Length: 428
Image (cartoon, rainbow, N blue to C red; front, top):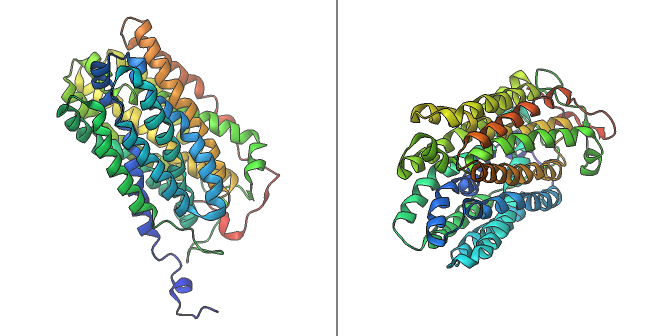
């Protein structure tokens, strides 16, 4: 049936797209709870006698398996839409957390790793990629900003969950039982938000928006499939940039509560409060750096993020004053979050949005690699250096400095691909 001139589907094609942003943020808040893991470290060590490296293992595996979910979920989403992928991933994520509550003895670390780490991580990855790819299609006129907002909720998740989890942990001797109510809450939030997800209709355009190639954040002129993107050096360079940005930032995130106490002498309660507050900067960085990248260019923004982290990590282990430590940690969280806010828009600029789910979903391997290597290296160097953060944080600072060579050499790809349709060529 032909649409009439007064049909809201044609006269107001963008109607409801901001509601999708709200739904996406709700979903990401539940997923971002994973960043509150550091408040579990000491309680689990005390209850089960695990080492620091053992206590952080479920978190490392969760981050390490995100790639599996994002790769599979991204490919399915591009073909079948975001709703079914997000709902299925949400169920897996919620159940993984719920089943984690069954861990009851020191010899069941494997169970916590399997449930929270593997099941939860794969489910998290499948859900995480869907609102990013979906909103990039709905907002070609605000690509950097909107992908930043799309993942900001993830950074803010720890703001809510860290103090709640800390309170629940303090009220029970069975620390893993806390995963039951948290898992139920995550499941409800994801299912509510994901049920609203949908892609824009074919031929969708934003009224009044004239797409162009120009400005500082330049978009390419061709659309790539996943296979074509994987045959370009740019895909690997972008993935390497994200990997190193992740490895640096998550090295602190995985140890935030412990490092705060060790370096500044703060109490466990104060450290847990700081972890929650730092989540605000993780979320804010995703919006701020993404917005800034629209104006100064994507690669200039990544140079800024990496340089900022290098400076902060050199100073952090010597920042005995709580206020100084908190400011430096906040800057690291800003830069870490900025990578996740800026890279989806960068990938869309380089490879187009039609296959964004699959292409950026594959790039999430950076999160898995960096998310495992950063915390693992930090924990091992911490224990090897006599329980001091000086060596691990200095090593991370050097890694960030070395990573600065990558953004300047990462330029827009040329052929293959196919020409972008008019409404796919975007710029700020």
